[in-house]
Amino acid sequence: MYMLRRPSGYSKIEMEDPEDIIHRRAQYLIYKVLQQADCKRKPLSIRVRICRLKIKIGRRLKKIRKSIVFRLPLTKVGFYRQLHSQFKAFKRLFGGGDTTIVSLPLLA
Image (cartoon, rainbow, N blue to C red):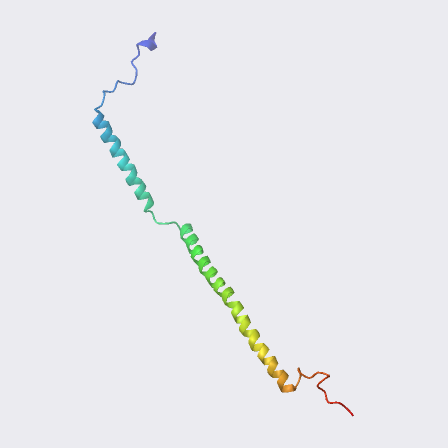
């Protein structure tokens, strides 16, 4: 019985004007948007900076590797041409190459 007579700790709230409710909700949303904008402006952590630097270095190394791979066949072709011309000159110098059995002088 004693519990029924005890007044509750809560009191009835008056009904608010709908315009006040809308205004309060808009202020809250504006506050949240400004708070999110502040969070985005924080300086980047060291991990993020290092990660971005690694990506930059990786891209540069990839470019260099591709350029080397692209130029390598051209260098090989140039090297083989030069080597071939050296062998031709060597053959001409020492008379090796075009001498076959048919072109040898006959012994009589």
